[in-house]
Structures are given as C-alpha cells and as structure tokens.
Image (cartoon, rainbow, N blue to C red; front, side, top):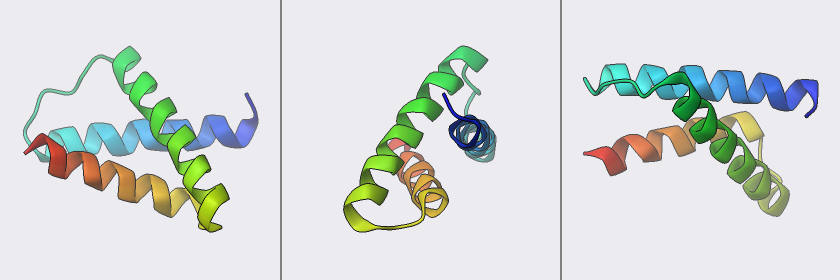
Length: 71
C-alpha cells in the first residue's frame, strides 16, 4: 500500500471515530475502524475514477452518509 493511501485511511479512521463520538455512539474497536476506513477509501477511489472528483471530499461525503444511515 502506498504512502498516500495509508494517509487517506488514517484520515478516514479519524473521521469515522469523530462521527461516532458526535452521534453519541460507542466507537468500534480500532481494527473495525481500520476495516471501515479501508472500504471507504477504496469506494472513494472508485467514485473518483468514474467522476474525476477529489478523493478526500468523497471520503468526507461517504462518512457523512454513514452518519445518516446509523440514525
């Protein structure tokens, strides 16, 4: 895995944890967060490839969508 992908996943983990805390939900174990983050980053890259969008903005949108699904 490349450096940039690792950084994207680390950011996604922090965003996910922040959203869980903000929604007053228990934060999953780090291994689960890493797995969720890896899936989010992978999905963001697929979307970016199709649309030509910025990966980081897509990751933020995907995390926000997760927040809506949990309600």
